[in-house]
Figure 1 (cartoon, one colour):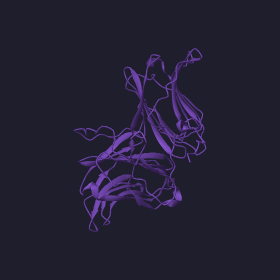
Figure 2 (cartoon, rainbow, N blue to C red; figure 1 turned 135 degrees about the vertical axis):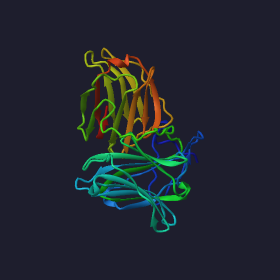
Figure 3 (cartoon, rainbow, N blue to C red; figure 1 turned 90 degrees about the vertical axis):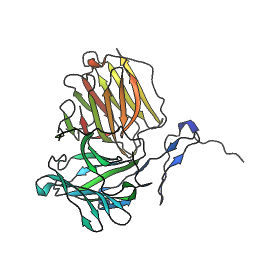
Figure 4 (cartoon, helix red, strand yellow; figure 1 turned 180 degrees about the vertical axis):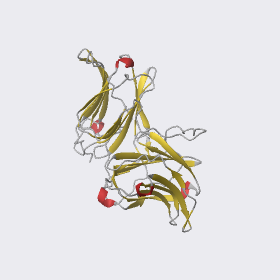
Length: 338
């Protein structure tokens, strides 16, 4: 006997799997293959050791979002093989002159340390760390900025587990599939990663609603990077790029979780234009952290979430008019760079 739908199928936006299980991938009825697993780890779960779903492969990413303890001494992120070898040891040490130590442990013995003295972390501050697996190295990005590369000393396909310990709390760990961003071309000289955003401003743990001026306007190639968390019972929130003199909204990004939609639009002289809604899947999930990057290109804005380009939005208002950023609704913010 065929059952009637209790909820319209088109309104289904999220599949929630709970219990003792690891989801390596799943395929929708349209044939789309998803290779993305998300788990949320509370601070009390540190030290944490857990499997990397599907192991590591070239193009895969491990995304860790959390907060450094105020009285931090050190913490470590390890990519661990089944035999206990540590392929990649990432170890910020505040108690040794604010240095980040990287190393490999094979057959119980540590190799030679690689030390970086440009400490990107701050006590008590939220962070997002992304480890991209490349053919020749692990590439580490912090809060949207490239930080370092660590050449493979052990084959990355041997890595099966993630280990985190030390003076850190973890909100969310994400393992993403092989649709990683384009490779980073390492410079021919040592670069000191800037501690300011693309427009010279970094806000840590700002209150919501947030209304700030964008110095120098949102000119071509400028970026805005928003790191935050969507509450479990979130209904909606919005990110607006505005023109202060007219009140026009050049880009309105509006995740609506009850509708399973990510709405984009423009408001001119108080009137909304035609909404854009189509996406293959909703990229934001209640209860999980996220990083949203907005870049101003010649003909459009490009918006990426957790390292993946989600949509392009053609300019309806000259982007040079944008001089304000507004964020409001059901969201908490860890950092905003602009």
